[in-house]
Image (tube, rainbow, N blue to C red; front, side, top):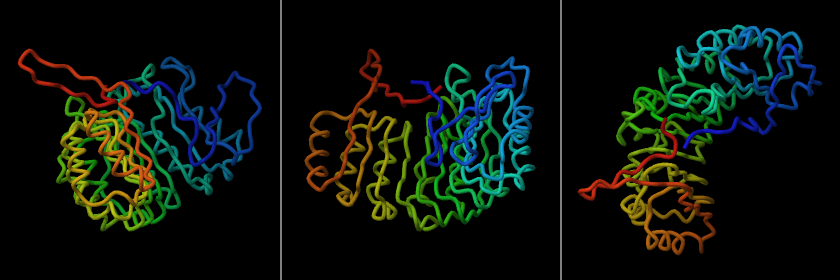
Length: 318
């Protein structure tokens, strides 16, 4: 599966695409939308930086609360270093900025595992009041450990998340973080982390306010489920999301045999490889306690070799 649609909202605000140079579009109030800035095509005569300069001239940026960075001209070849530098340089003009998503790029523009990224932490250090941050694309992505006292939501969407990024996030001090969503991906596209790399997250020691944990889109989803079954952080969660990966009966059995999950508001396992008996056990165990359980298989599919070896695939790879 590929990502087929752009973000429709950020920070609870509807996305609004800042118009092109030759478009005559009435602009909304600066604080009423999440402003999406990006190139229309790769041969767009106006580059991202020029569009952002025009945005800063046409919009009262002191009231802007959310920014979505869309396609940049050379996403196939280089990361958004200059974009990050431009945003940080404009931070005095963006005092109300509370949310940024970097890489709102869909499959027809550039497949997720072809998007070039870079060290994204200067955005967090440059905006200490930022409450939400998201990034799409794992190639070249860097996230060295840091401390950020305001960040409440962190989303990293990849088809293959490098282990150094997993370790950097796990080692970060994020005392306000409530929502963590990591798309771990597949080794075909650069995923090389192991369950042990997730242990600082699963312990919850640096994440005292975490309530929503998503460790998903992983080719080691069964192993992650087994680790989650006894993870201390689970007891304080409202939502646990292990969807979009290769979860099968082994992982589901580990979840059912581990610590109680009846305190959860939602257990999201959509896109999975569970047998019907395991689905039924999951429902019978959790739904009477009021847990919303998403067991939709979606379009999960597999191949089988002549020798009987079964190959499962994550939801979003290339």
